[in-house]
Length: 444
Image (tube, rainbow, N blue to C red):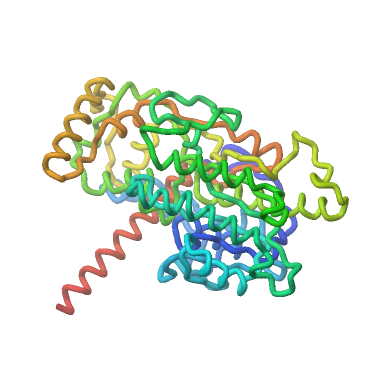
């Protein structure tokens, strides 16, 4: 029977996947590091002295109230054949999030010459692009990385003659990490939205989402083209990534608030609280990326064996040239997610019905607007603005049926465990930071 953390029995693990030489772009970032970890069958767990243990999840007076058996990820995710898979990572700086078994390369993805140097060394069969700035980065940075960087990557990866050692070596699969927000105007409800929804470009509310949409269209348009040496491409759109290492997403934001905010603030709720929201554990996002990569390699082999351009692939089973939404397949109420994490951060008693202060959305939006004005006048960015109010109140969840049907995707880690893992990582990170600061004071 499934444990309390899972709502379904997982099927038996498949034979180890053989992916050839894989180059992970942005491999030292939050998502990229998780891609490297899963490709290497989770050396991060081998670095820990205890990979399977019961984790206490409460810091408050009821410590020990929440107990979960966080089983090793390496026993649940599909294994990778290490003899037939070589892992490389590329990032602008490779000083953090390094894992044993991966070879690291420093390069700017907007510099074609630097990229070619790396490609000449790596000779990749598969490129998985996870590089991306934070969603609130300056527009110039978003444009440079998400659009210009993706174009340069496509040009270099597809022009195999500029880096192939024997002239015949080609990059066969290019998997691009996009975003579920490419179809969202950041204002309207999204209910079970899927890949048939149109891009929202231009996007006056979120330039990040606009750059992601432009880059995704570029990647999909390149699929199988002569100008990219027949390289097959696809895009994966994550929705609300959570998990270990999140330093800028929803799980980090909630944990940070729980760590510093007074109790009355944690009892505030914006809107009615009946809006559904998607969060996706980072390991499940990686699984989606690797399944798509495997599908592209299979298609590439079929094309080579059949001599037919599309390999005889039927439209309803096609992976190349396609976009895939990846979620946990478990939309939850936004404020239930928030209060769940508050309680696991040790803030017991938060969210009781007699304590919740539900502010009407219109009133909350007014406060957000005033906060923006105050921030513009003082140069101090507030915690609330009209956009955060909107995201706290609207429905925003997606369908991942296409990824399930065409690639066999089944989420491995459920929402509850994913949020628990986020909390545990944040607490460990806080303790390490406090220890570092204490050590620095001693040496001063």
